Length: 308
Image 1 (spheres, rainbow, N blue to C red):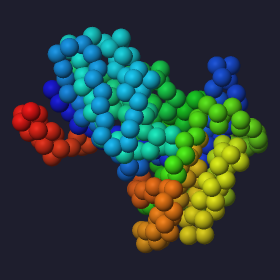
Image 2 (image 1 turned 90 degrees about the vertical axis):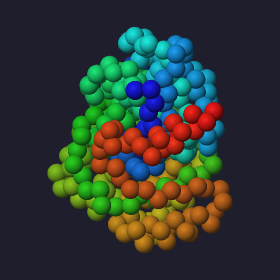
Image 3 (image 1 turned 180 degrees about the vertical axis):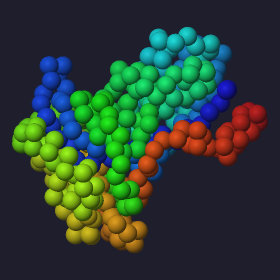
Image 4 (image 1 turned 30 degrees about the vertical axis):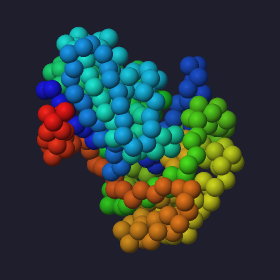
């Protein structure tokens, strides 16, 4: 296959507990990852020369080797012989530094595209193992859906959870360093208590218990530096969100709503503030990559190439 277009989804965290600091400097965590219908779109084209060419439209992204697309390409090439190289153009829509995993998702999409286009036949498990060498939450984006994340976030347990809600994202023009947030955070409560909270949550599978059960333990330190984010969370509850939280290490704040009308009314309120972008999304239950190839855009892309 010479060309391929994949949607690359964002994720939210439903709760994020810190369990302990590891010898490698990372933290063991406990969280629920959920893919949502906010996407970047990645256009992949095979090239004859053994190199990666990277471009973008929309939100600017770094094009050097620090980009996780580069890391995914170089890791795949190191492990599997490739005839030729790859050109990747990113239609960037997921805000950067917002705790939504856009870069990790792009890396996972790149691994998936290389596997398909160069016909390597790797399983999801093999791709997840490779993804774990790139970043903590990259393995989640191989399959997506709803999953408990443990370890650094790379130990995944798919779970069934109701997805009949709407997600409102409030994304201010603020970037939060993940490394800084984790370095400043304090670990409270015991691991046993946190595990018990998750066990109860998934035994009952009751969305109404999220507010009482879950907490993002990075919020305290991030909200102290960026009090506007705390205000967003408080206002989401005033607009009848049944759960509100910072996603990951921030800076985005999410609100979950039972009804579309509630979410739209809240979005109208937050959109008044020109310091923020808002996105109204739905949870995505699973990543069927085959169905995520945009055939219409693929044909448009091929037609445009022939005109050049």
